[in-house]
Length: 96
Image (cartoon, rainbow, N blue to C red; front, top):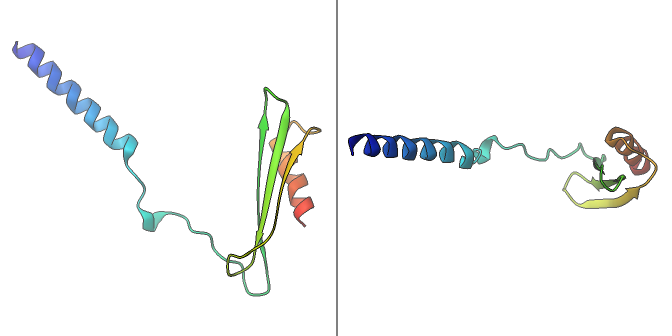
């Protein structure tokens, strides 16, 4: 009985430790915030993804001013590229 009780307690401690590590949220003050661009500039953020199963890529662009106001945005599906890098390059050129 003691061996079962001891094993049970070790299992509970292990699960509790794992859950604490997995569910630990980052400190909000340590999170990266969106830094605004300088006055009279805009900031363009680009992201891309590629689906191997569909053999299609997608990209999105968002352009914001120093106040965070959206000045423009775009979402595109790409059939010609099989590289996320190339899709991001094309998205940057499109945004410019």
